[in-house]
Image (cartoon, rainbow, N blue to C red; front, top):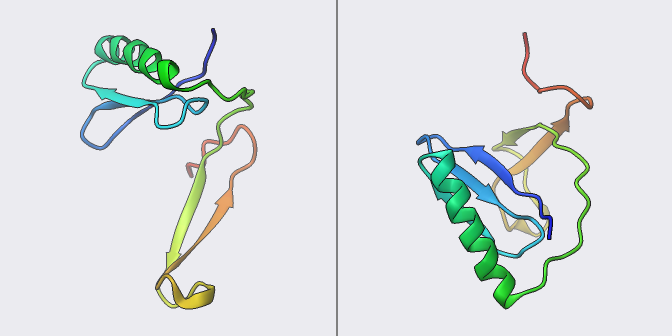
Length: 96
């Protein structure tokens, strides 16, 4: 079965992988080699408990989130709201 995994590198240098088609299916490792081994293991464990949701990979889009300390959410549940903007397709979202 073919599944998509999203791999990112966190601020501490760890690789973090998630599998969107499987709820709560994620792992992390210091190297890509170890991450791949752990990812195979966690996918097998998750699939023993649940069926993957059929998903089609479309792409990745960077977004920028700006927090406003003066705006409020309806109902007063949060003291800040976020505003985000999407970058054009193919854009990295980084300014030159």
